[in-house]
Amino acid sequence: MKNRILSLDVFRGITVMMMTIVNNPGDWGHIYAPLEHAAWNGCTPTDLVFPFFLFIVGVSVSISQSGTVAFSKILTRTLSLLLLGWFLSFFSKIHVSDWSGAPLMVIRLLATAIMTLLFFTDYPRKLHVSLALFALAILLAFGGFEDFANVRLPGVLPRIALVYALLAMLHGRIATRGLVHLSLLFLITYWAFMTYMPVPGIGAGSLQEGKNLAAYVDNYLLPGHLWSVTKTWDPEGILSTIPAFTTGILGMLAGLYFRSQTRLLAMAGLFCIVMGAVWDLSFPINKALWSSSFVLYTGGWAIVLLCLLYWIVDVRQFAGWTKPFVIFGVNPMLVFFFSGIIPRALNMLEVEGKGLTAYLQDVLFASRISDPFLASFAGAFTYLLIWFLILRFFYQRGHIFKV
Image (tube, rainbow, N blue to C red; front, side):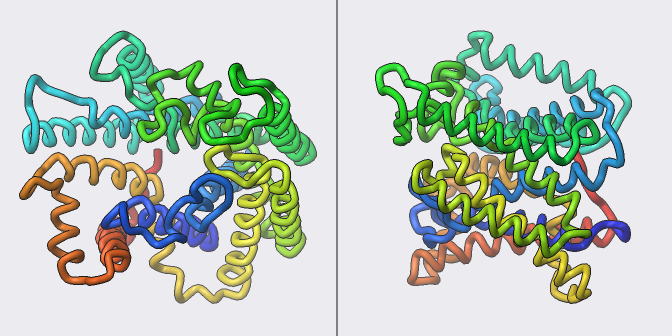
């Protein structure tokens, strides 16, 4: 860990800690406003989390790879990320006869253990295993199997996988100017599609929830395999992945210059924030659509934060406060994956008619704290502390789990 750039781990850690809190409230009905996503247009602190993840993927690609990477390695990591994301969707679809409760939970956790061994470790035939499991997942999703007919295929990890794949292919193969031009091409093309291409039955230019081109493409290409909350469109859908590529490329560009041109890069970040705010007037800042203005606005904040952290932590050597963030920052994928598994598993166990997580929230916090919002936050913060203890154990022993 000695050769790691401390500010990058702090940046990652801040993002992971924020993700852990917002994704695991004690009570989904009582969440402080900054810890919720914007209802549609707009941007809350929570809306920064996912673009910050994609941004740091870009930074990591540009600083950790000295030259071009073999296609086989890119494909292996891409499939690993994709399949871990899909497993989060498949987890609740795994059934054995009429089993339920603890026995079924054990089976699903055994499947999780197998996935962990397959994708959080390296071994010679990892690509072959990944390709086989990819084919199996496609067969289950589209082969007419009732249990998997509505399994969600888009998602956070699948989008990270696609963005990583493009960035890794671009790294060492395209110059800085080319990256800038490609970023602009993605943003402008997406804006033109969303505002000028007519949607059947709706027309052109609609940016309403569920009534826009991105939603139409999602429902046309992946019917039944979208986010269960919306069913007809997905916030990590197909078309909106185009501008998400630019979020990653902004990270690549930042990775090239944040150590040598820190002040200039910070000014560029401020410029992106302003341009995103201006573009918001005609193409609203919107996470679900991943609008071009959202890319510039959130990317600008990511650049500014990275430059600020680099100046404070690595240049000024003011790093005494960073250890908790570093502990989270060195194992981000472990936290993300298992933060998706743990609630799903615990909710399979019922106590007094409630899932175990809801029961514990009531007993430990809701019954003791009169303010339901504070009780909900206390539950989320406790979950964060539990993760801190787990990750601290790994950190002290030098264990870093990579996909």
